[in-house]
Each structure stands twice: as C-alpha cells, then as structure tokens.
Image 1 (cartoon, one colour):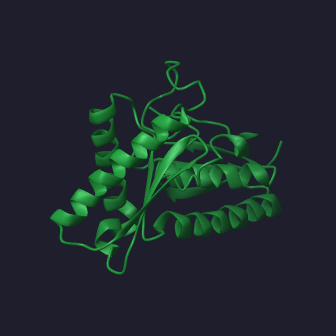
Image 2 (cartoon, rainbow, N blue to C red):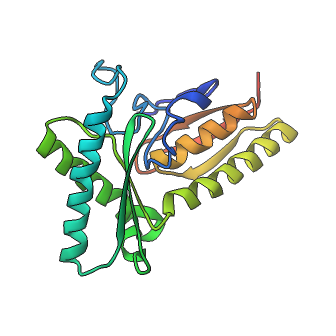
Length: 199
C-alpha cells in the first residue's frame, strides 16, 4: 500500500517540540507517536502536570537503564509544547544512539511503553541522547532547503532516500516553508519523501 500526504501548509503542524522528536511525519500519524490520530484521542491540549509526570517517569526509567549498562549520563527533563522531552548528555553515549539513531528510536519506544505502563496514558515524549536529534534536525533542514532549491530550479520532482518519521517531518516542514509541496510514499522502513514543484 502506498499512501501520500501533502505538506503544503504543514510547517506549523507539530512544530513545537524540536520535532527533534524523533518521529513526526505528515502521514495519518500527525504527531509521530505511532498512532494514526484518526481516532480522536489526541485532540486536546496537553496537561502540563501529566507531561511533567511523563518526563519524571521517563527520566527514572532511563536512569535505571544507564545504571544497568554502567554508563554515565546527566538527564534533563523539560516540557516543550505539548510533550515531555528527556535528554541524556554525557561523554560516552554513542552506543545509545546507534547507527542513524536506530538505538535511540528503540530506547524512545521502550521509554514510552514504560511511561504508558505507569501512567496509563499514551506518551508522546521525545528522547534525545547526546544532542543527536538536534544535530540531525540541522542536517535535514539543510538537505530540505537544498532539494527544494533544486526542484524549484529544474521543475522536476525529487525523491529522497528512506527516512524515519522524525526525518521525514523535518523535510516536509522545510519544503513547505520554501513554498513547495512534498509527499511521503512507501511503507516503513522504506518510506521516503518526494518533493514536487509548487503548483
């Protein structure tokens, strides 16, 4: 099955939390939490106290994992927009990020499950380790601008490589801010963005 999603005007969708978040895309999963968001359970503003609780539970969970793995790291918890953000910083955390952030994505999902289990609420928290998501956001924003300029110059659509929902969301937002449109196509894990000329 191939589904497509227009990114026109999408620059404001979920632009609040770093969308470093690790997994925002413009598919039916508007907030990148793995749910299709068509069931109406994610429509209201987030309760800050619930987000703080999610962040605390997530920070405790990550701290426990760091202890088990005998890794050092400082944990920061914050609420940005409508999600809790837990960041781990330290000197030797590359193994917790993995190649292209795969380990980070898995840890984020495990952390969300731990939060859900304790709070009963589906968590949309974002986990960042060693600033990986912030660096990746910068790289992808530059890529999105470059591809948008090329598409505008040539008038030909450009298909990008497979990306995670987090990465696709950044490209969609960048392309939309350049006045072009983009769509996601394909199935995970080979889902990709196609950038089209305006019009």
